[in-house]
Image (cartoon, rainbow, N blue to C red; front, side):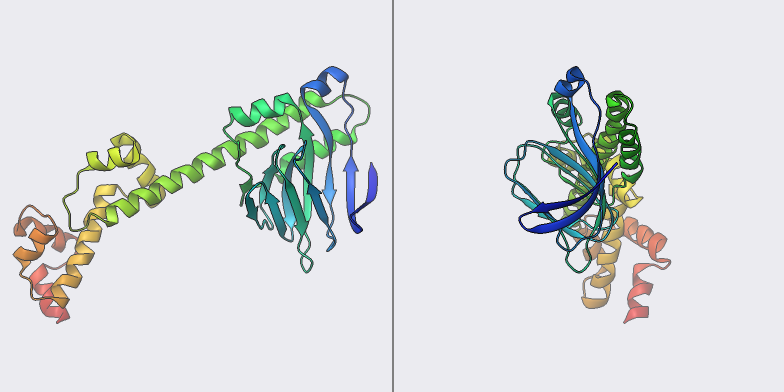
Length: 278
């Protein structure tokens, strides 16, 4: 165990750092450089032009700023990030609320293969992804200076990358759900066919329904139907359009079907709703 006061560009940073014991063959495969804990310091700052190493870090408390490649983000308590090799890396803690964080620095061809295999290329920031337990496990492994623990560390890194993989999948699905919702919002007074939506986002009908329902707890069809009824309420109270005209405008098959759906959703029929709210 080594407690270091690191000096870099005339800044002072407090870190507890551990180095790994590795055989040459293992090191050629994946070079576990060091891991440890960064303690709160308003002067903490790191800059690596075209970094040859990757950093995986978890913010335990505090906040800071990170610049990697063309991206910038401001991680805080509970966030993780993965600064990949080959990019300019600059990160520093907030002077008024400096961070405490856990980290591992690593490089090597195996890391590159894992990153690509899990589809994490150019994914740097993981807000709310908790990998504290995994990084503390790696730190405990590094404390054992009696043997090469490369295999065990790779296993824990795999757990981290699996978490990151599912995080990116969830983010992608959430983005698709928002895209579906935005599409539906444009179809309130237009003819809607789910086949058109499927072509729009290049997914099957079952995938579209599953993605949307997981995000919003309702099918796309029911969501659109609810939006139509909400819009019809505005038309009933703010225009002189007849119920037949409103049903036609909102693409219902006829006014009777519209009235039945409206009563099911609102508890009263359209004509009663209009009288009550006027």
